[in-house]
Image 1 (tube, rainbow, N blue to C red):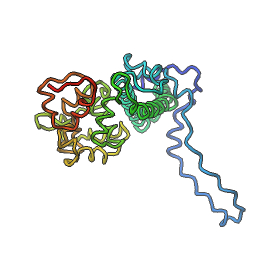
Image 2 (image 1 turned 30 degrees about the vertical axis):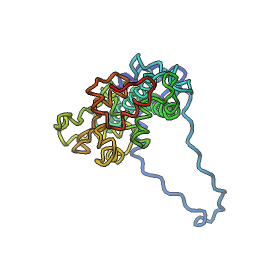
Image 3 (image 1 turned 60 degrees about the horizontal axis):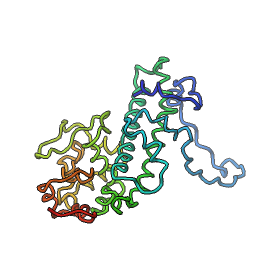
Image 4 (image 1 turned 90 degrees about the horizontal axis):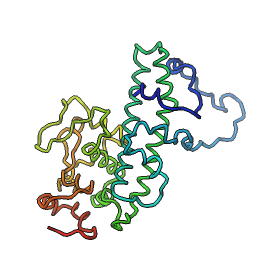
Length: 311
């Protein structure tokens, strides 16, 4: 990933600092002494300055070209065409494409940040050869801020546009309606989207995150010492407690089999029911698959759509 960052076009951006060695120098400097209170120093106190609000991302951080290379070609239009729209999504697929783009960039942010930290902290890189230094500098100064800005921007766009009705059905997208049916919180919706993409896309291809619940009741793919659930929560920016709450046995979506809970919270990532996956993707379900969700609340998502007929 670092080698890839060194090829990102940076025209129009401020030049990188001369050395990454400043990172290690700052890390080794002793902490500054705490400022003496005005009363103890005998100096007159000045008026308190209110804390500044978080600044908006810089324009260069929101330039689509800074992160386009992290996305597959099929999702590149999300950064230019869809992101400028404020109304409803044009289709179910458009909503899922933006969701996949956000998660893909979140995975890239997690992977790149981890590699940069490892490079800076490792003993072999403290001398910072010129080749390594330029890649780390470029990542810290340009790629990482750009990824953070786009993950936030896409997240805000999803939250604002998902509740809006589609022109084709007059209803919000299925993903939003399923979350509403099961009263999922904001973090739980983010996790549900991650679980959907974990099974239906290559968004998580660059991280070791394959331990999930087996439909046959077996264990995960990795040993119990691995922590794929922690990795998933770190990537999606959700606390581990939200993933635990999502899998509680008393939750309706767990009782009805929509979310298949894992036996070990840290060592297994929960899975989604195959019928729920097909429903969220807008793919047809067979009669036997419809029978499997006939008594589940997920069926309401299909029943309320115009033109749907029970088998």
